[in-house]
Amino acid sequence: MLKLENIKVSYKLAAIVIVGIVGFLSLLFISANALKENLVAEREARLKAVIQSTLSQVAYLNQTLPKEQAQEQAKALINALRFDGNNYMFVIDESRYTVVHPIRQDLVGQQMGNPGKDTEGQFWFTMIDLARNGQQGSLIYPWKNQQGNPADKLSFVNGFAPWGWILGSGMLLDDIEHAVYQQFLRMGFATLIVTLVMIGLGVVISRAMIQPLDTIKDVMKKVAQGDLTAQIPVLGKDELGIVAQRINNSIAAVHDALVESVQSASSVAEAAIRIASSAEETSQAVVSQRDQLSQLATAMNQMTATVADVAGHAEDTARDTLDASKEANLGDKDVHSSVDSIRALSVELGVATDQVNKLKEGVMQISEVTSVISGISEQTNLLALNAAIEAARAGDQGRGFAVVADEVRNLASRTHHSTDEIQTMINRLQQLAVSTASAMQKSQALAANSVATAENAGSDLSLIVNHIQHVSDKATQIATAAEEQSAVAEEMNRNVSGINDAALEMSQAATYLAEESEKLADLSRQLDQKLTAFKL
Image 1 (tube, helix red, strand yellow):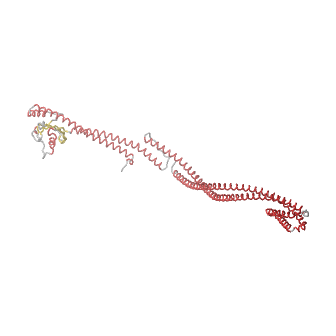
Image 2 (spheres, helix red, strand yellow; image 1 turned 180 degrees about the horizontal axis):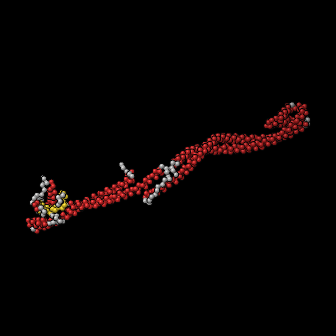
Image 3 (cartoon, one colour; image 1 turned 120 degrees about the vertical axis):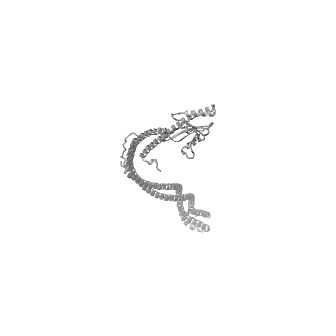
């Protein structure tokens, strides 16, 4: 289908001119036809007016006079009637017989029209059909003018029912056709003048429009080929001039925009390269950071395990230290008990020393107090038994004293069993008493030293207990701190894992950024290559 926008402007302007010419010609023929119809209608109206006027007079005669008299006067009236020059009226009856004919009296009484032979007289039948029973109508039929030339004739007929008459009159239309023809010639000449003017104006306007449009088309072709230096000559201030000016402004704006685009494309390409380089460096840095974070995560895992071991060992140390503290407290109590025992032993040794001294004096006086040997022997036996008990308590340090006590007990036993040998043994007993007294003094000194040593050991053990308690507290604190450090290390390990994941995402993002930056640089280079195709 042919679209209007696909037709050239010159063809469109030619079509407008052609449509105008066709319109004028159509108006010419329509006007001529309308003029003819108006003239025919006017003539028909005149015929109708004459016939109806005559018919009214006939009707009056019919009402006032007898029928025959009225018909005679009506015939005379119609025969004498003329209008518009020599135009006349005629009368026929419904059987087509001529009743009145002012011009052709020879036709009166004759039947008009022959249905079998006279094809040209068929209009008589039409008249009968139009005016039967008092009706009326008009018709046009072929006739001849005064020169004998064919011409159309207009007739109007109106029936008078009381008498069966049909009154009619006709007028030739050749003068109307001549007038219409003359008017047609005048209007045709005017139409021709207007058509020539329209064609001339169409040519001028077409050139005035097509030449600038061709110029615009050529310039836009250059612009399409990349030449942005082309400009359209502005030849006027009409719409085409305004369009040309605005196209020039648009080309200038595009030129400036492309110049800026070239500069921007270069800047974008350089920036994209820098971004790609930075993104690559960032990616490498992130990869390095991720490796370090992986190592840190491994170290944190190891530290977490180590801290857990430290916490376990610290708890074990705290428990062992607590047990040691308990054992040290028991040892401190035992030391204090030993000090008390040694102190009691020292007192007993002092007593024993006094007794030994007394024994020595008694032995020295044995010769005088033999009577009490037996009692002394028993007391000595008891003292020896007690001394043996205390010596057993003293352990290694009282071992020598135990020997002496045993000997004393043996001596007492022997004294008890063989008092006879007492005198013999007095000298030896005196020596033994002296030795015993000396040993007892030494034992008492050793016991005093043992008390001092035991007291010092008790003090040191108390200090050890205090230190052990302090160590136990510290171990408990270390265990608690180790547990807290283990929790913190675990949290740090999770954070390091999160940082490692974030670093992985950052590495991927940096890689993506580098790839996109490289694409952007390629697009910038492509844009720069495309922009170089324009002539700026």
